[in-house]
Image (cartoon, rainbow, N blue to C red):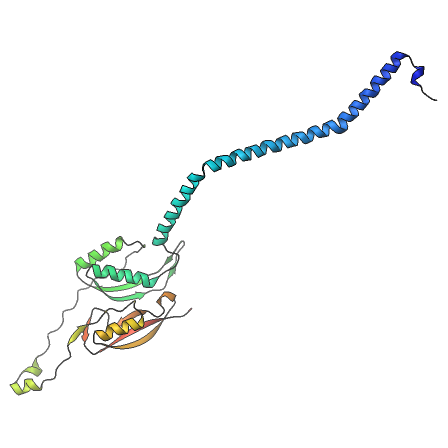
Length: 257
């Protein structure tokens, strides 16, 4: 059966036309407008997020000088902390500084013996055994200077002993007539042994030779690379008295991994 709008009344024709228009409009709205509105809403949300991020970025830019100042302050604090707790141990440098502090305090370091390192939670403890000679006042001045040392140094296990008095020499060989005195043997003069701990072996040999002593060298194994080639001990100790021309043994560190 064929339908023809011309056979309908004009009111029916208008109604049919309106119905067709409504269907077309609904189809356009459903298939095009709704998708466009959804995409527009997504873009608006993204735009809002970008504007928020941009606002945060501008706020951060305005605080950039403040952040740079904080970084400079932290770097300065880091440098000061590295002076107190360095990343690497330097035994030779510490020894030189302690020797200088002892000299300023009129204290003579007799022996400086490094001990095995002890790993702690946040740092490595590097103990040393120090033997020195001097008065109570010199020892107190040395401790005071140690307290102002930039490195962290703890002093423990202190042992203080009185220096033994030298025994008077017997004069039996010098008693008698003038001929006996003339035939008495001459004893070599006593001299002070230089403290060469912490020096390299060539410098130590030269200092001891200049003081009138002969040098014996022995190697001593060490696990600290900073002690390689340096004098870690000597016998007799520095500051002691020995006959001029006698032998002084130096112990030179030899690094072994």
